Image (cartoon, rainbow, N blue to C red; front, side, top):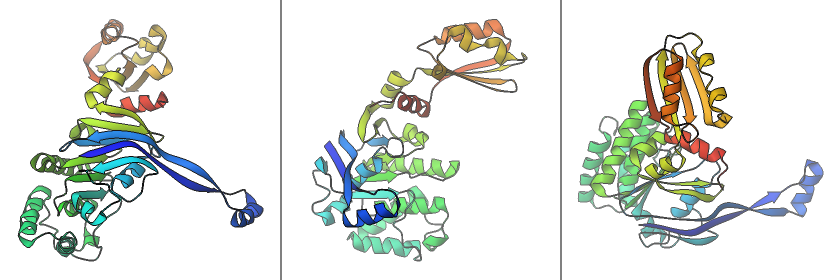
Length: 334
């Protein structure tokens, strides 16, 4: 469905010397330098897959999405969606994609939501019978009925996000690009939107590309992630592969009545952990120890802990994706 090969995007940036003299000089003798935002990125997304597309701020995610949606033209490389070039035949191409930007809306601010959808129906040339069936489906999945007659400017953030997702799906696109779809939302609304995305993907086999800083979205919705940093591919694979490769961090949680338990245990001195391989948090009787199990196995940590202090309750959990990615970036992956 989505094919990207050696995609590259370069921008020209004006270079100005400091001060008034520099401003005048740049006005008459402008200088520029080349900035490479995206460096030869390649990946494929089959039909019906939910892809988590992630990276830190400035990694080049938005630039890639803009090239895939046809907003920007690549400097070099190939990107096609359903066999189409995003920059060619724009009118027919946009009928095959839906786009939601979490901090921007495609809705008309002062129009009632129902009228906004009516305008989009005409723009996308959706036949009346298909439009009615589509709206019935979107009402069911996204629960729009309670605010569909309200002006967009009166909607809450959660309502507006659901409304934006519905707007992007009116024309039944084959590919849906979601940029931070749960940003700023409370837990309940986030869960509702995740459920809606999951349902739409399963029912209609809609291919979804999801960019987000909320890694709970990735864990719950995507089975595969593409991670980029500094404009280049860093990782492409399943979440389980990512955890197996970089997820040797474990968390030991326990409850103890022992006073000064943190000092008694002294994990760092006993096991010679590097600073980045160990962190200990203590709040009252609750302790959380995050450690690199490739340095010290879980069995040794448990044996040492239970031999040093009295423990009422204890549990061990895998590191979440956020922790894994944090460590990966700290390693300075190229």
